[in-house]
Length: 133
Image 1 (cartoon, rainbow, N blue to C red):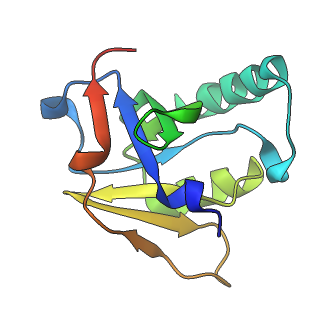
Image 2: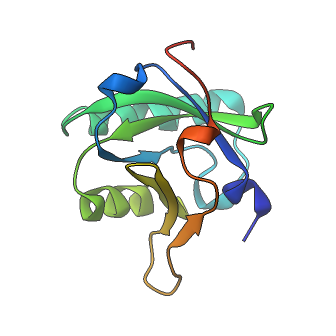
Image 3: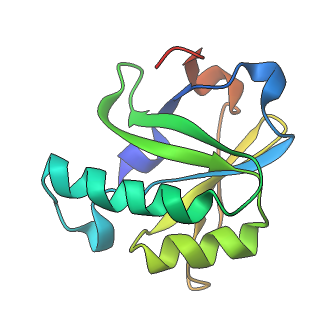
């Protein structure tokens, strides 16, 4: 597993007191681990957002590796059922998604042949700023 999946940080459009108690974070960038152009990534991510708007509690999230948000990608938070979002992430060619429950952050793969990974240190310490992008 690439370290970038575990060395993750976030920017949120929602202030913390509006975050759902449990939600998932996903993106459609670089599907099937194929490097797309910025324009191609924007198109697939906008298509994912259109699909997500049919579900509850959707909000924008910027995710990136390292504290300086190197290799950042726009993504989306959603409070819908995990099973639904895993199926969606799989359809959009993603390895998995991030699951936030309270302050616990996990990387959950789309397939059952890999285990969920709890990312040490908690979720809130990985939020660089909220309500700023």
